[in-house]
Image (cartoon, rainbow, N blue to C red; front, side, top):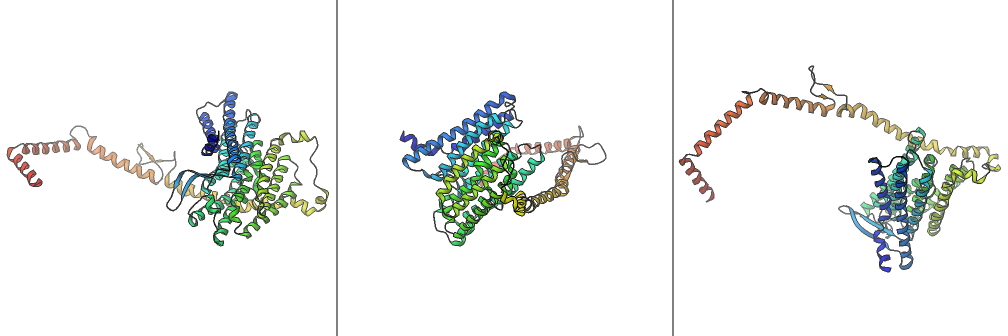
Length: 507
């Protein structure tokens, strides 16, 4: 038994691998046309559930091993991106923080998978949902279990892409796709901070491994700049000020995705990143103070805005942001154990609440409570809370509108320069007045058409004039010359001269 438990950490890659494999198999079934109608739903749901349960069981077994013999720690299983002074490794860091977070995510993922099978029955995007859900479970487990920042960033981006796809689940609705783009653009600012931290770690430390970033004492300036990049990433992913507005728009997705993404798991990824890198932040107290202030301001903002919400999911999401703000405060104060316990318990509790959201009013049998009297008496504060302190408009003006303008400029550049230069399918113009053999558009197309015309002329001149043409005459003349040379070489005197010349060359 001990031998089996000792080898379990070597298979931790299966935790993200199983849901990713399930998503790939489901995608293949869809492409092959084997996932249609009501009969196609049970295999998809069953495959996703088995993959999620397999990861949960494996993590529980590793947890047992950690309780009996200690946490496995940092394990390198291979190299996937070799470099000159650094390399990207397939490494996993199995300590109390990662095992607790990953086990919570696996449990919630399995429950949401089971819930979704019935909730999304006969939905047009049933199989698409489970494909994206499997990819998300793989990404979030990479974030929690990876032993280096580069592999964690792969999971980070996978979570962002799947979040975008599930916010825009009802892609026929402009509101859903608009909110998906807004959330995607906002989170890219956080991703830029993550990439900055990774780039500086590679340049200054020569490694992406978490122990290298947190194990030594760095110069103050180096530690501060590294810390700021990762803090920005955490603020954006966990919807803390000034990045809070995107999370309310993210509720456009189905209830199961709201539960696992914005209620329990993905929204805590920023908290996890701060907990993972807390030894680095401890070297720069001013950064810890900034984390504390950001968390306190976000908690106050979410509390006030949550008091005036009248729908269940909005009230729950601002309650989630409030709790995560408190986790940031705890991290800023150095209470990392409290923040870790808070993360796991809050994730489980909030997932249960979000899954019950569609039937919450029936369960409570009472209308939502109005805003408290003290808030209604302060008209300016009440109006600000209703308007969410106008942060949505500010975020749209500072993030969404510049992104939209940039996309419009790129599209104009493509339409007025790239397309005319490279050509577009179906818009070619014939060359010449005669019935064209080819139609060309764009510089490459015209060059190819010109080359085809030249080759066609050569072919017509040399080989398409029938018997007696130029090509035939040249071939006959060349054959006559070769026969003359052959006859000369067959003469004894020329043959002896060739043999003597060969000996001279050899000697």
